[in-house]
Length: 576
Ligand SMILES: [Zn+2]
Image (cartoon, rainbow, N blue to C red; front, side, top):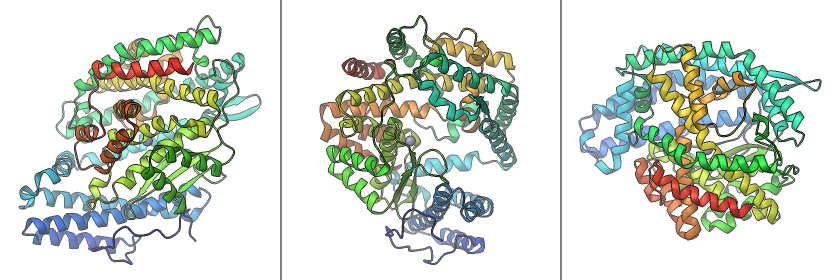
């Protein structure tokens, strides 16, 4: 049974090394291919031979990767299919644990290879330094600690996923409650917000326990790898070669001086528009003029057609790429029973084609998600010509430039979805969202810097550190009567639990996206061609060079942020 939305896809390049009929469920077959590669590396006495080994290893990795992506896509498109679930779990439980040590062994063999130093420097420097870090940080005794870390993360997710409240006689999940914060009726908003806050606080002690467990394991992992603290370990393991913890601290200070004043100004305006004495936590998501929610499209076909028209305005290449995705059925966008929640873009690494998954229901957020995921898909398509598997994906800091730029550039043509005033209302909501995100990002990032450089801290000290950051970045919201909810607000930020230190990337990328947008204001065609040139580099060059090629500086200082905030403020003033 074919559970995939797309049919047979045209192969990008015929396989040279992996047999056409390879069975990825059969570990001995895969293991034999790794044996062959090890022997080939050992026999490679020239640079050419070594490069050929690297390409074939990449071919195998891409084929395995695509196989796993297909299983994941089938499972998320058919959560009710036992067959799809089993196929995915077979990969996670049977194939992946055997795969990891073999991939690691090949990385070690590469690093010790006599021809490694003779590889063309410019071509291999990025790959070489990342491979070296993975091998450098590997510690046998960290494997069980990482397993325990994953399990604690799962406990956190189960705990949060199981939280429900009784609202107006019905049991509701917390994500379901979020839409009530957009209701014009203030007392209803307050009731909904307080129910959720109270429910979260019930589990606060358990969440603190989980986090103590996680931070202890992480300190141990860092110590085993020879690091003074987990922050320094995390920067290395995330391959942050081009910025340091101090750059992040400077970024936080720049957000405080350049962006917080704009946030306060926006909150002041919101308070006046809502005719309130003080803004409370339940007043932040409602339309300030109490208008009904925007309805951009009727069904998914309609959404795709209108999105296509936006790309037609922007650029012939992007328009063609989006049309090709429709022709190959690489989009599964409607919300229906039996689909996993959320949205994602996944790359089929052997076909070198992107796939977009969404649950569109007809709200403005869907339009933003569609443009965002299309940006990721354009990135995947732009790297199709790159034969070296490792370079077909970029670091996350730049991947999100690809997607966030597309939100901003696409928003210039929102008239494809709305009449003029509604298009401006949607633009305004989007831009305000960008401004408000920066202080929250700084809070989450600065909090983690504090946590992992203060080992052995007490819970009271941790709470005090969090509250100091809420004072610094929290804006004008009046939390009186809800002090406990404010003190525990970080409990709901999944990244702190599951992906430590993975958050500043979004802030770095948003600065890049704002620059791409600023450039397009001066020269749309020029900005889009720089954007596409940078996307086509994939992960073959260091971050600052990817940014530079896209026409952006890789800098998170007040000086870099100031003109971008001026642009956003000017734009917001026009959209009023
Ligand atoms: Zn994204």
